[in-house]
Length: 131
Length: 179
Image (tube, rainbow over all chains, first blue to last red; front, side, top):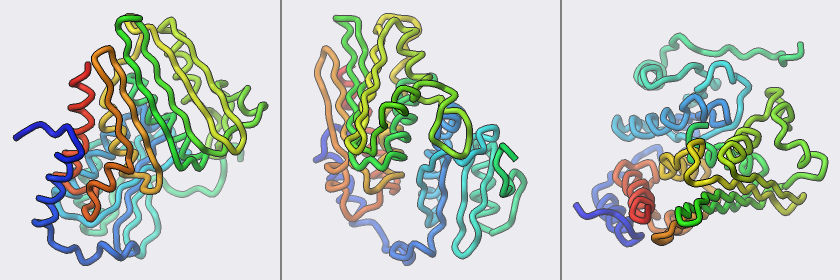
């Protein structure tokens, strides 16, 4: 396998992929997609959120889960970083704290695939730190 | 922040919060002159004089979710601990420019880190952001823009395994070739 160093190399890979790719039914329908947002503020980065984000991307592809992974800023749960917000279609967003690779796997296998709630959810409090 | 790559990811988040649509990053490793430079420029909303003066204060932040803002102060600390310099310029409605200089041979200079992952994840997580990256060393330079990458892979998702690995490899190989 030759090393990929130019845009032409990238285009070659993309062409190979496109000819093999099956059309995904949900790809044009954002409300039907699972959205995963990984907290990527200073506290998140320092706690290894980047690796967690990469892990989610890799696992979703591996397991053919229709999901969009994005970064988000500080959600205020710095003590529980890395944090991940998961929005299943038609459900309320749920935030998980202390997400390591093991927890991420659990979130994918149990919450995203089966819809079952698991430990480690940070409840929504409607008060700020001052109150 | 253990690596330059982590700092880049962190500062980029500031630019994204400032609604930047273009972020330019220049990373320069000049072993001959014993300098390492990291420049990040954005076209976000910028800061006025009062905010700019406070930006590197760890206890100052414009966020509402918490009371500390560590990103810039950590970068400034690392630059100064490595016998380097830190500068921050900003203009309202024009943008912000961060420059951190480090002494290359200094034991406290953070390593480059996996900048290819940082750049890939940033492009993945921010579809409408134009990211330009340039890496310069004594052996050569490499640059790319997110626009070029997106145009090249048009029609296929950036998350797709082969495409994802190809993008990360492209960046990683080009940077390692000039180390």
